[in-house]
Image (cartoon, rainbow, N blue to C red; front, side):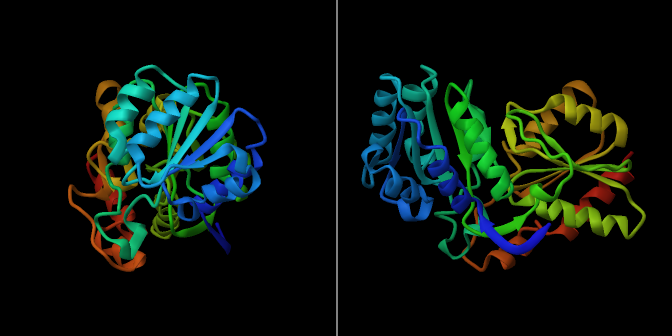
Length: 315
């Protein structure tokens, strides 16, 4: 991992949308938060294809649906608390049900939003979106992966949801030999034989640090990066379950309905093994410094390592 230049995934997203935004079919909409979601970067480059809808998220989703029916690739933006939350009805019935080519990008996801507190800390966005039939759900872990995810999202025909973070994070994937991004396919960032840590978004870096700590105790931990939560890479997960015999999931999201739930569904139907979930445990967030919140909600590398040892003890 490289900490020389930490970059927030929301910043990387804005730069990637500008990079891949030359296609005249791409139209971006925002709900008065362009400087925060970083859609403003696209707006500066392509002002003729950018609309600030004001604080009217539900209306934005309806306008996006209408534009998509004319052949546009529409990307809509707000905080993850509001997109999909505040416009869920319109997303479900006007975008996903007719399978329109609209991409929803929710920034400021998870508790690392920090001082903005529980009203702005989206811990349910993955569960809301993965429950929608045909919706692709993305949660990239760093700037490089975000860039590749944006490209794949724009090329995919159909509705997608991507969550991005406010906090600047370590760069991981560009340092992994053989790293390859493919929609719907997870990435094994580190091999191991004793236990598998399956992580997404911000928690991927924490998972790698946990694997380092476990290695000091002679425990070989495999680390899998799940950037696409739906469709989930069931083949990779089942291979890990068979080869290591224990699974830990790590997410900056409620454990109900998120990555942990998705992985558990696959395992229980196909190859049950001992499993532990690291995430926010059915509660709202609090206002505070991101690092303090990560510790308070037990999302640290030490918490992941403890969960790994607990899962292994149940083999």
